[in-house]
Image 1 (cartoon, one colour):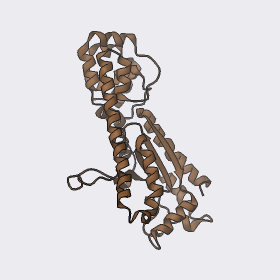
Image 2: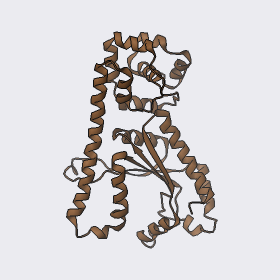
Image 3: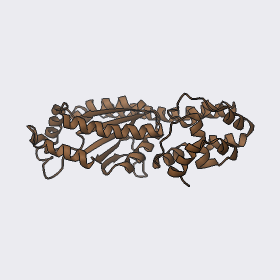
Length: 304
């Protein structure tokens, strides 16, 4: 089934869109794309029971699935917000901590179910007239995006295959159930520790006037190898208040602001400084170095 050219075309279209959006803002992550295998699809339909899925009612929503694993925990929320805005959301599994559930520990799931484009929906509809039409008629014109961190990804794989799909194996073994969740808890703690480590490292580079290293560890983006302009280095070396302002910029808010726009420029150290200055700082010395072609893009896509 996964060799079906129609499904492969749909998968590629969505994957190209996701990769373009992630590449534009430079988030460190990996993406895995798959079409649900025929046997896996049939097993899911059978496991849910007779009449759970129907042509007129509820349908399978993840014939195309995308798992995005980010290097850092805060980027899960960033990408969630980006794709929630980009696509029509049909359903979600978005676990959050509340006053009511704060005493209960369980793994966090961040899954988005989104509507396909009209073109891809038409391609999927045409498959219902194929040899496997009965199966295709139970598939919705949706796809799923799962968001994980790199550290938690392996745990989720094990949990899905060896617990979620065979829960009865665990019915009489509550201690083992709790222990498996506990392993996830250590990974969640490690995700937070990883972020703190890089924040501390960024501060030390700031104190040492190591500006490239500060930017790399502070913003944790895919930055090109082009070195920071010596003129910018000189300005930062002579103006500690400016350097402090850059260091104190809220990473999440800054990336979200760029993500909301249609700005598309290479993510270099220089361009990162120019963008930070345009949006947050307004330093005249940095502004004088801003190339006109980039300023034109800023005015068009980031206009204040």
